[in-house]
Amino acid sequence: MASAQIEIKKPSSSYWLWLGDNRAKIIAVVGNGNVSAVGKKAGEMWKALPAAAKLPFEKKAQEQKDAYEKLINTDAGKKALEEKKAASKEVKDEKNQKAELKEQKFKEKEAKQNERKCKAAVKSVEKDDALKKPQSSYWLWLGDNRAKITALVGSKGSDVAKKGGEMWKVASASEKLPYEKKGLEQKAAYDKYLASPEGQAAMKAFKDAVSGAKDEFKPKEEPVAEAGPVEEVAGTKRKAKEVVIAEKDAPAEGAAAKKARGRPAKAHLGA
Image (cartoon, rainbow, N blue to C red; front, top):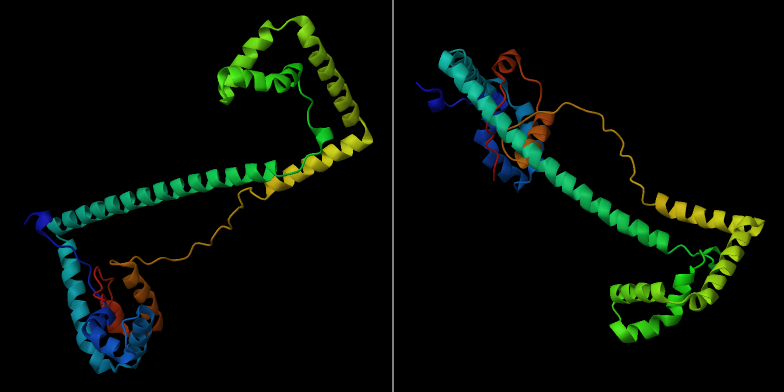
């Protein structure tokens, strides 16, 4: 028999066999199919179940376990099991890759949003006019001649800047002189202010405010979660949740039941 034709299905425990047969009854008792309510009630009912009532399920679980172990000890069974593990790993790896890519995109988007907010916060920090760097002779000239340049090329910023640069290059020394003088005067006043105790205090206050604004948007370190045991259960997240709830409430089984316990590949708990 080809390995592809062999179905490798892990045996169910006695509890899960019983739950599969009694889930409709439990839903009727709790009044709805809520996962938590069904799981809790199932655990309570299994605990209260007499040994005689559990016996058929324990016997069936043992039969499944024996058949499973017999199958996976054959050459065909071993091959089918390896193929199933490889296929499961491939699916799991693909799922993890998709989750990682999604997480990466989310973090990148979040980082960009955070960067924009940070820039806006920094920009909103008020800066005293005396702390603003003085303009160069060119920018002083451009401020006085912007309207004239706009009339020639329009209001588009890049066009104004290009035309302004061209005009400044060909401007005569006498035309530039007043702006160069004013630029030097502004720079001297700026340097003098920054060198004064008042200017130094004002600059420090401004830098501290900017630093504080940036700190608000620094990524916060997440606490490292302590790893705990994880049980893999085939099926949906809803089924996995019910597994945890039900097995938490279910009592320890007897020796025969423990021997028969297996991990189910499919828990028929869907509504």
